[in-house]
Image 1 (cartoon, rainbow, N blue to C red):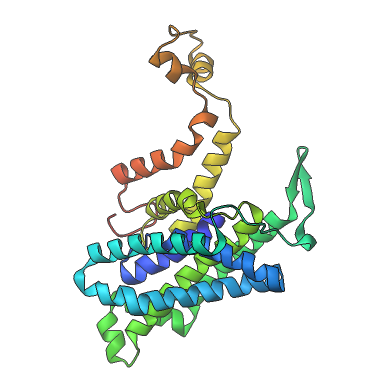
Image 2 (cartoon, one colour):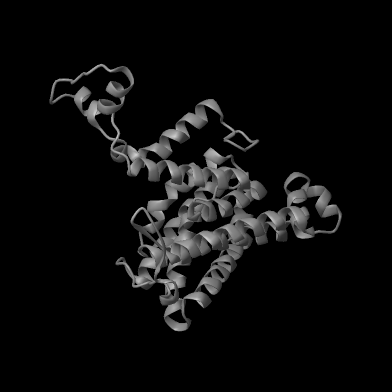
Length: 303
Protein backbone atom coordinates (compact mmCIF):
# COMPACT_ATOMS: atom_id res chain seq x y z
CA UNK A 1 0.00 0.00 0.00
CA UNK A 2 3.01 2.26 0.43
CA UNK A 3 3.65 1.82 -3.28
CA UNK A 4 0.06 2.78 -4.01
CA UNK A 5 0.24 5.99 -2.00
CA UNK A 6 3.25 7.09 -4.01
CA UNK A 7 1.87 5.88 -7.34
CA UNK A 8 -1.51 7.53 -6.73
CA UNK A 9 0.04 10.98 -6.52
CA UNK A 10 2.12 10.47 -9.62
CA UNK A 11 -0.90 9.07 -11.47
CA UNK A 12 -3.04 12.05 -10.54
CA UNK A 13 -0.40 14.48 -11.77
CA UNK A 14 0.13 12.62 -15.02
CA UNK A 15 -3.56 12.10 -15.74
CA UNK A 16 -4.27 15.80 -15.21
CA UNK A 17 -1.20 17.48 -16.64
CA UNK A 18 0.58 14.86 -18.73
CA UNK A 19 3.73 15.40 -16.64
CA UNK A 20 5.92 12.52 -15.52
CA UNK A 21 7.20 14.04 -12.31
CA UNK A 22 10.73 12.73 -11.74
CA UNK A 23 10.84 14.63 -8.44
CA UNK A 24 7.90 12.66 -7.01
CA UNK A 25 10.10 10.29 -5.00
CA UNK A 26 11.97 13.33 -3.67
CA UNK A 27 8.71 14.70 -2.29
CA UNK A 28 8.26 11.30 -0.64
CA UNK A 29 11.67 11.75 1.00
CA UNK A 30 10.82 15.33 1.94
CA UNK A 31 7.64 14.06 3.64
CA UNK A 32 9.70 11.61 5.69
CA UNK A 33 12.12 14.27 6.91
CA UNK A 34 9.35 16.78 7.59
CA UNK A 35 7.51 14.07 9.50
CA UNK A 36 10.64 13.37 11.54
CA UNK A 37 11.22 17.04 12.34
CA UNK A 38 7.63 17.81 13.29
CA UNK A 39 7.39 14.62 15.36
CA UNK A 40 10.31 15.91 17.44
CA UNK A 41 8.25 18.97 18.35
CA UNK A 42 4.65 17.80 18.37
CA UNK A 43 4.56 14.00 18.13
CA UNK A 44 3.91 11.50 15.35
CA UNK A 45 0.24 12.05 14.59
CA UNK A 46 0.44 15.86 14.16
CA UNK A 47 3.48 15.19 11.95
CA UNK A 48 1.47 12.74 9.85
CA UNK A 49 -1.01 15.56 9.15
CA UNK A 50 1.32 18.56 8.88
CA UNK A 51 4.15 17.03 6.83
CA UNK A 52 1.94 16.23 3.79
CA UNK A 53 0.28 19.64 4.16
CA UNK A 54 3.63 21.45 3.96
CA UNK A 55 4.94 19.22 1.16
CA UNK A 56 1.68 19.72 -0.75
CA UNK A 57 1.99 23.49 -0.40
CA UNK A 58 5.57 23.33 -1.69
CA UNK A 59 4.39 21.18 -4.58
CA UNK A 60 1.66 23.68 -5.45
CA UNK A 61 4.23 26.49 -5.47
CA UNK A 62 6.50 24.42 -7.69
CA UNK A 63 3.67 24.01 -10.18
CA UNK A 64 2.64 27.66 -10.03
CA UNK A 65 6.06 29.24 -10.43
CA UNK A 66 8.04 26.44 -12.10
CA UNK A 67 6.14 23.90 -14.14
CA UNK A 68 3.59 26.38 -15.43
CA UNK A 69 6.40 28.52 -16.78
CA UNK A 70 8.25 25.71 -18.56
CA UNK A 71 5.04 24.07 -19.77
CA UNK A 72 5.05 26.24 -22.92
CA UNK A 73 8.36 24.64 -23.95
CA UNK A 74 6.86 21.14 -24.07
CA UNK A 75 7.10 17.90 -22.12
CA UNK A 76 10.87 17.54 -22.55
CA UNK A 77 11.38 20.80 -20.69
CA UNK A 78 8.99 19.62 -17.97
CA UNK A 79 10.87 16.34 -17.59
CA UNK A 80 14.21 18.15 -17.32
CA UNK A 81 12.71 20.59 -14.82
CA UNK A 82 11.45 17.83 -12.51
CA UNK A 83 14.73 15.94 -12.97
CA UNK A 84 16.67 18.96 -11.74
CA UNK A 85 14.14 19.60 -8.98
CA UNK A 86 14.79 16.10 -7.60
CA UNK A 87 18.47 16.93 -7.15
CA UNK A 88 17.65 20.29 -5.59
CA UNK A 89 15.37 18.67 -3.00
CA UNK A 90 17.96 16.01 -2.21
CA UNK A 91 20.72 18.59 -1.73
CA UNK A 92 18.53 20.78 0.46
CA UNK A 93 17.64 17.79 2.65
CA UNK A 94 21.30 16.86 3.00
CA UNK A 95 22.17 20.45 3.93
CA UNK A 96 19.50 20.56 6.66
CA UNK A 97 19.48 17.01 8.06
CA UNK A 98 22.78 15.59 6.80
CA UNK A 99 23.52 12.36 4.94
CA UNK A 100 23.13 9.99 7.88
CA UNK A 101 19.81 8.46 8.90
CA UNK A 102 17.72 10.30 11.47
CA UNK A 103 16.01 8.84 14.53
CA UNK A 104 12.43 8.86 13.23
CA UNK A 105 10.41 6.31 15.20
CA UNK A 106 6.91 4.91 15.09
CA UNK A 107 4.59 6.03 17.93
CA UNK A 108 4.76 3.95 21.11
CA UNK A 109 0.99 3.47 21.07
CA UNK A 110 1.37 1.42 17.84
CA UNK A 111 4.63 -0.30 18.72
CA UNK A 112 3.33 -3.79 19.47
CA UNK A 113 2.42 -7.01 17.67
CA UNK A 114 -1.13 -6.94 16.26
CA UNK A 115 -1.36 -10.70 15.63
CA UNK A 116 0.73 -13.76 14.86
CA UNK A 117 0.61 -15.87 11.69
CA UNK A 118 2.63 -19.10 11.46
CA UNK A 119 4.85 -17.96 14.27
CA UNK A 120 5.52 -14.55 12.69
CA UNK A 121 4.43 -11.41 14.52
CA UNK A 122 2.73 -8.73 12.45
CA UNK A 123 3.40 -5.20 13.79
CA UNK A 124 0.41 -3.02 14.64
CA UNK A 125 2.04 -0.08 12.86
CA UNK A 126 1.93 -1.99 9.56
CA UNK A 127 -1.78 -2.63 10.13
CA UNK A 128 -2.20 1.09 10.74
CA UNK A 129 -0.33 1.86 7.49
CA UNK A 130 -2.54 -0.58 5.58
CA UNK A 131 -5.80 0.80 6.97
CA UNK A 132 -4.66 4.39 6.48
CA UNK A 133 -3.70 3.71 2.85
CA UNK A 134 -6.99 1.94 2.08
CA UNK A 135 -8.93 4.87 3.56
CA UNK A 136 -6.98 7.28 1.35
CA UNK A 137 -7.71 5.12 -1.72
CA UNK A 138 -11.44 5.07 -0.92
CA UNK A 139 -11.42 8.80 -0.22
CA UNK A 140 -9.70 9.56 -3.51
CA UNK A 141 -12.11 7.41 -5.51
CA UNK A 142 -15.12 9.02 -3.81
CA UNK A 143 -13.69 12.49 -4.29
CA UNK A 144 -13.02 11.94 -8.00
CA UNK A 145 -16.31 10.21 -8.78
CA UNK A 146 -18.86 11.53 -6.28
CA UNK A 147 -18.03 15.18 -5.68
CA UNK A 148 -18.32 18.36 -7.71
CA UNK A 149 -14.58 18.99 -7.32
CA UNK A 150 -13.83 15.54 -8.70
CA UNK A 151 -16.09 16.09 -11.69
CA UNK A 152 -14.34 19.40 -12.42
CA UNK A 153 -10.95 17.68 -12.19
CA UNK A 154 -11.99 14.94 -14.60
CA UNK A 155 -13.60 17.41 -16.96
CA UNK A 156 -10.43 19.55 -16.89
CA UNK A 157 -8.52 16.49 -18.06
CA UNK A 158 -10.62 15.87 -21.15
CA UNK A 159 -12.16 19.28 -21.93
CA UNK A 160 -10.04 22.01 -20.31
CA UNK A 161 -11.26 24.75 -22.64
CA UNK A 162 -14.92 23.95 -21.98
CA UNK A 163 -14.32 23.89 -18.21
CA UNK A 164 -12.58 27.26 -18.48
CA UNK A 165 -15.51 28.72 -20.44
CA UNK A 166 -17.85 27.57 -17.65
CA UNK A 167 -16.00 29.84 -15.27
CA UNK A 168 -13.62 27.44 -13.55
CA UNK A 169 -9.97 28.37 -13.13
CA UNK A 170 -8.28 25.42 -14.86
CA UNK A 171 -4.67 26.47 -14.04
CA UNK A 172 -5.66 26.66 -10.37
CA UNK A 173 -7.16 23.18 -10.62
CA UNK A 174 -3.85 21.93 -12.05
CA UNK A 175 -1.94 23.60 -9.22
CA UNK A 176 -4.18 22.01 -6.58
CA UNK A 177 -3.89 18.58 -8.20
CA UNK A 178 -0.10 18.85 -8.30
CA UNK A 179 -0.14 19.84 -4.63
CA UNK A 180 -2.44 16.92 -3.82
CA UNK A 181 -0.15 14.53 -5.68
CA UNK A 182 2.94 15.68 -3.80
CA UNK A 183 1.02 15.54 -0.51
CA UNK A 184 0.19 11.88 -1.19
CA UNK A 185 3.88 11.16 -1.74
CA UNK A 186 4.65 12.97 1.53
CA UNK A 187 2.06 10.86 3.39
CA UNK A 188 3.87 7.74 2.20
CA UNK A 189 7.17 9.23 3.34
CA UNK A 190 5.86 10.25 6.76
CA UNK A 191 4.50 6.72 7.28
CA UNK A 192 7.33 4.67 5.87
CA UNK A 193 10.06 6.88 7.32
CA UNK A 194 8.90 5.89 10.79
CA UNK A 195 8.54 2.25 9.79
CA UNK A 196 11.91 1.82 8.08
CA UNK A 197 14.88 4.13 7.69
CA UNK A 198 14.77 7.88 7.03
CA UNK A 199 17.89 8.94 5.21
CA UNK A 200 18.92 11.09 2.28
CA UNK A 201 19.02 8.30 -0.32
CA UNK A 202 15.53 6.89 0.27
CA UNK A 203 14.19 8.60 -2.86
CA UNK A 204 16.74 6.84 -5.04
CA UNK A 205 15.77 3.47 -3.52
CA UNK A 206 12.04 3.77 -4.20
CA UNK A 207 11.95 6.07 -7.22
CA UNK A 208 12.53 3.45 -9.96
CA UNK A 209 9.94 1.02 -8.59
CA UNK A 210 7.42 3.86 -8.47
CA UNK A 211 7.58 4.37 -12.23
CA UNK A 212 7.34 0.60 -12.77
CA UNK A 213 4.05 0.57 -10.82
CA UNK A 214 2.61 3.49 -12.75
CA UNK A 215 3.50 2.00 -16.15
CA UNK A 216 2.37 -1.54 -15.26
CA UNK A 217 -0.93 -0.27 -13.85
CA UNK A 218 -1.50 2.09 -16.76
CA UNK A 219 -0.55 5.74 -17.02
CA UNK A 220 -3.30 7.88 -15.57
CA UNK A 221 -5.26 5.00 -13.99
CA UNK A 222 -5.77 5.23 -10.23
CA UNK A 223 -7.25 1.73 -10.10
CA UNK A 224 -4.32 0.46 -12.17
CA UNK A 225 -1.86 1.96 -9.70
CA UNK A 226 -3.71 0.27 -6.84
CA UNK A 227 -3.72 -3.16 -8.52
CA UNK A 228 -0.13 -2.90 -9.79
CA UNK A 229 1.19 -1.89 -6.37
CA UNK A 230 -0.47 -4.94 -4.77
CA UNK A 231 0.65 -7.23 -7.61
CA UNK A 232 4.29 -6.12 -7.53
CA UNK A 233 4.46 -6.23 -3.74
CA UNK A 234 3.00 -9.76 -3.75
CA UNK A 235 5.42 -10.98 -6.44
CA UNK A 236 8.47 -9.52 -4.69
CA UNK A 237 7.47 -10.84 -1.24
CA UNK A 238 6.67 -14.31 -2.63
CA UNK A 239 9.93 -14.46 -4.58
CA UNK A 240 11.99 -13.24 -1.61
CA UNK A 241 10.70 -16.07 0.53
CA UNK A 242 11.14 -18.77 -2.13
CA UNK A 243 14.21 -20.95 -2.75
CA UNK A 244 12.86 -22.30 -6.06
CA UNK A 245 15.32 -22.54 -8.96
CA UNK A 246 15.50 -24.24 -12.37
CA UNK A 247 17.50 -27.05 -10.77
CA UNK A 248 14.45 -27.85 -8.60
CA UNK A 249 11.57 -26.89 -10.89
CA UNK A 250 12.64 -28.76 -14.05
CA UNK A 251 13.23 -32.17 -12.37
CA UNK A 252 9.94 -31.73 -10.48
CA UNK A 253 8.02 -31.08 -13.73
CA UNK A 254 9.79 -33.54 -16.06
CA UNK A 255 11.46 -36.09 -13.79
CA UNK A 256 14.73 -35.47 -15.69
CA UNK A 257 17.85 -34.90 -13.63
CA UNK A 258 20.39 -32.51 -15.16
CA UNK A 259 23.44 -30.81 -13.71
CA UNK A 260 25.51 -28.39 -15.88
CA UNK A 261 29.28 -28.33 -15.56
CA UNK A 262 30.54 -26.11 -12.77
CA UNK A 263 31.74 -23.41 -12.90
CA UNK A 264 29.88 -22.13 -15.97
CA UNK A 265 27.32 -19.50 -16.90
CA UNK A 266 24.71 -22.23 -17.50
CA UNK A 267 25.30 -23.60 -14.01
CA UNK A 268 24.80 -20.13 -12.52
CA UNK A 269 21.50 -19.73 -14.37
CA UNK A 270 20.51 -23.28 -13.40
CA UNK A 271 21.00 -22.78 -9.68
CA UNK A 272 20.00 -19.14 -9.14
CA UNK A 273 16.96 -18.93 -6.84
CA UNK A 274 13.87 -16.74 -7.07
CA UNK A 275 14.97 -14.95 -3.92
CA UNK A 276 18.19 -13.88 -5.63
CA UNK A 277 16.39 -12.38 -8.62
CA UNK A 278 13.44 -10.94 -6.65
CA UNK A 279 14.60 -7.30 -7.09
CA UNK A 280 14.66 -7.84 -10.89
CA UNK A 281 11.11 -9.20 -11.19
CA UNK A 282 9.27 -5.81 -11.18
CA UNK A 283 11.46 -4.61 -14.03
CA UNK A 284 10.88 -7.86 -15.91
CA UNK A 285 7.14 -7.23 -15.50
CA UNK A 286 7.67 -3.73 -16.86
CA UNK A 287 9.40 -5.07 -19.98
CA UNK A 288 6.67 -7.66 -20.58
CA UNK A 289 3.90 -5.08 -20.14
CA UNK A 290 5.58 -2.67 -22.55
CA UNK A 291 5.88 -5.49 -25.12
CA UNK A 292 2.44 -7.04 -24.84
CA UNK A 293 0.23 -4.26 -23.42
CA UNK A 294 1.84 -0.81 -23.78
CA UNK A 295 -1.16 0.91 -22.20
CA UNK A 296 -0.64 -0.99 -18.94
CA UNK A 297 -3.16 -3.22 -17.18
CA UNK A 298 -5.87 -0.55 -16.82
CA UNK A 299 -4.56 2.38 -18.80
CA UNK A 300 -5.91 3.81 -22.02
CA UNK A 301 -2.86 5.81 -23.07
CA UNK A 302 0.22 4.49 -24.87
CA UNK A 303 3.32 4.71 -22.70
